[in-house]
Image (cartoon, rainbow, N blue to C red; front, side, top):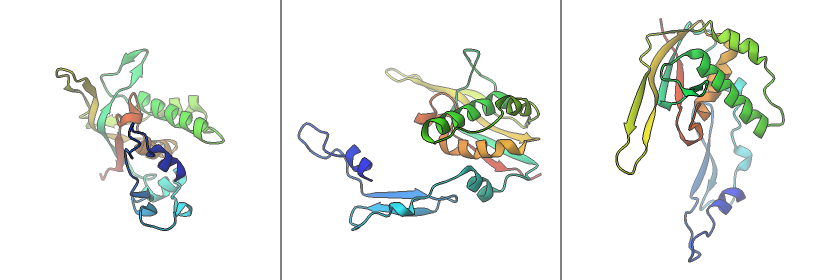
Amino acid sequence: MDAVRLLFDKHTKKNELSAVVERVESLGYHDEPTLIYSEGSPRENADSLNLLTAEGLRDARLLDNAPAMRLRLVTPLKLMQEGRTMRHFSFSPFIRTLIRRASSLASYYCDDGIPADYRWLTSLSEAVRVSKCTIRWVEWGGSQGGGKLAGLAGEAILTSMPEEFIPFLLLGELFNVGKGAPFGLGRFTVAAEEP
């Protein structure tokens, strides 16, 4: 909490507060909020912080036995392949980029990286089938003084999904994938698809 307070501490020229932290909540597996800090509260509840795990996400979502999954690209997704932007969706580059992002974040922020056989996972990705795909290249903006927001958006049904990819997909829902992921691009959701 001290780090959050320091972030918003007096940063303006007149030594005025640029922002005030009124409330901090931690969300659980089903988006249930837990109060961590409230401006009028006498104490912080840092012990109540929800720490999510891949196993917990998997147990909470129950996607393991789903015959099919719906992948929905919520914000534009930009994937690079051989130095070029991909303008058509393919599952294999998508999951490889997602695994690379999860691995990078784990090695940077955790004690250990993700122990996985990446070549084997890459070979597994070729078996996933994409159907009913409405994912298309979209472009927004580009007016005077503004940049163009572009990427892949839409939905697809994924079948023959190996269970090894489920934790990566569930984690990816939380931290996005592709270029601009830290800024909100590449946000996606997955859900079990009823036959």
